[in-house]
Amino acid sequence: MTHTHLSENRPDADVDTVAPLPGTALTPLSIALIELALAAGGFGIGTGEFAIMGLLPEVATTYGVSVPQAGYVIAAYALGVVIGAPIIAVLAARMTRRVLLLALMGVFAAGNILSAIAPDFATFTALRFITGLPHGAYFGVAALVAASMAPIHKRARAVGRVMLGLTIATLLGTPLATFFGQMFSWRAAFMMVGGIALLTVALLWFFQPRDKVQEGASIWRELGAFRRVQVWLTLAVASVGFGGMFAVFSYIAKTTTDVAMMPVATVPMVLALFGIGMNVGNVVGSRMADYSLNGTIGGMLALNVVLMALFGLTAHNPYMLCICVFLIGCGFAACPAVQTRLMDVAADAQTLAAASNHSAFNIANALGAWLGGVVIAMGYGYASTGYIGAVLSLGGLAVFCVAVALERREKAAVTA
Picture 1 (cartoon, helix red, strand yellow):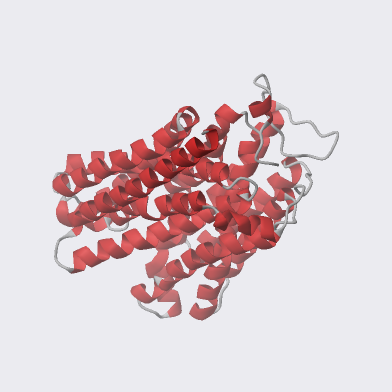
Picture 2 (cartoon, rainbow, N blue to C red):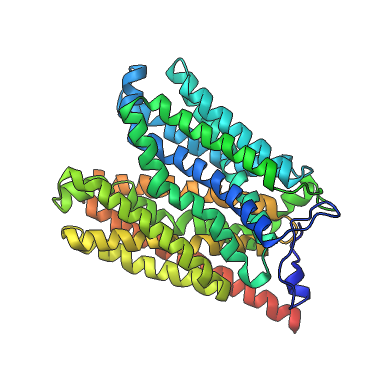
């Protein structure tokens, strides 16, 4: 699965292949089934990542620790994502993508099932770190597989369909896992996530065709991604620009109850609005990206600056809070575009770059939550997270403008 698509060379080409073994043809149905299998993995990962946030009190009670201490497991998982994505992408350079996807989802399944039976808090924390390791690499490789099966003008939509598993998880998977966890035990929630991961392994086994290792693939070629300035700039856009969304989302429950003065019972509804926004943004944004990749990224970052500031100004109004939360969720529209841009600027080192995108998003998560907590602790209130979000979105937009300017200068130098 190389960076060059058949559709780039032949305008009438409908589909590029996943570099299957000779004699293996991909029909529209087989492509849909592959995308379904890839999205199922995203659904499992998204459910497992976010469900713990609603189950921290139960985990804390089980292990006899405070809720803030129990929160360390969230940081452990995020650290696993940040570290695992680039390391796995490099070390697995000589593996076929089918084998790699199966291995990654197998580790994720085992990590969740073992988490459900962890005897003590230290073991549980270590297992959450291990479970986070395959997260970024899975999404990166899944995006590459999906994009390689689509014509050049529909790549972002293919990536968006895989990402749909993640966004649907925020809307359905996480509430369902939280419900099971609160109704029975938090251990049951992790068993459920492990079951989804095992189902994904089965789907990938049956539907993902056997493929070949890319010609010339090596550790050194993958590491070459980090020699490209555009890769670093695009990762910086994700790390900074999307921090604003997490700055708001991390404290949205307290903003809802303490600023908008809405009943506690309405918090799930507000969270659902955010999830709906993410799904809408993913679908619409992936289509926009196929028409204008850079336009989608720059436009959404600029829109986010306005939305975040509006959130800070109007969070006291319940109706405006709900509208802003939905629209901020729609800001996820830039995600498929950023993922696709990374594939483009990484040239022949796509696996490392695509996987590192999810490390960047977890950095954004940590950065947004931290800065949001800082301004709240300084006494500016929960609504001030909107202003932090606006600053971070503006910072991401500034980095993106630098990236585009350098890109245009490089192209001009080549054509001169």
